[in-house]
Image 1 (cartoon, rainbow, N blue to C red):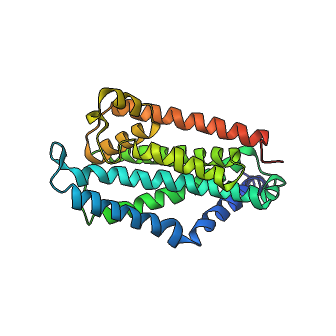
Image 2 (cartoon, one colour):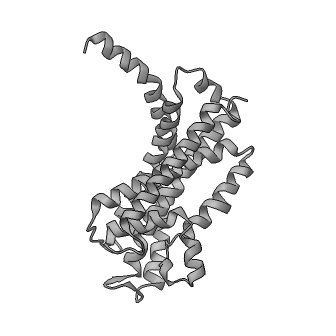
Image 3 (cartoon, rainbow, N blue to C red):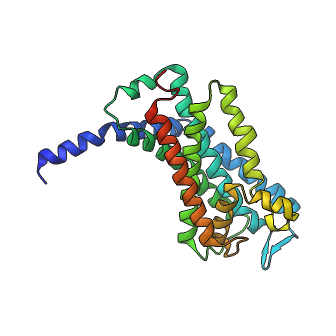
Length: 263
């Protein structure tokens, strides 16, 4: 490949790389708020629910409540922080008007979408890694299927990074955006099996819980961490991949159409 062709390719991806770098630096400059704060919250959950209340509770065979809840808390941190990053960043750009700067850039819709999504995934996954490091002080997980666990946690960060963009587009005010986080995302997280096995619920509520996409993400990630699951691991992976594809198409269509972005 000639130097001219390589320079042309580099120039094509330069706006994408610049926007991605900007989005990563945006949350890294306030890392105490974006990375340390959620880890402290997860540590408190581990101490109170895992050590304080669940020390003698056996959940599944050889695993106690602490081991059961750690994968859920890791995934909860990934999901909530990926959502918060993409939703707040895109909405703030709309709010202060600098979204115009992005629209006049030679930036394809796919690159625009991926820059916001990947930056949010990075934040979510960093929180997950740090939460995992802290959890070692409470219990060590066996990780019988590490590759599967990585696939599920990457899918989780992808799904909720995209969901954050969708929420930011539809939100007209900060209050509207908060509705997505407080009245939709958080109930989905807490009712998805973070702190309890869904199989122990009454049959009706167990069926309702299985309409929650977070259930499959948590169940699949827990299978990778502990080797136990309440649902077929293959089905967990396929359902999660299908949900991520649906959110990608939804977010892409919204951004490409300019709905509530160009106005």
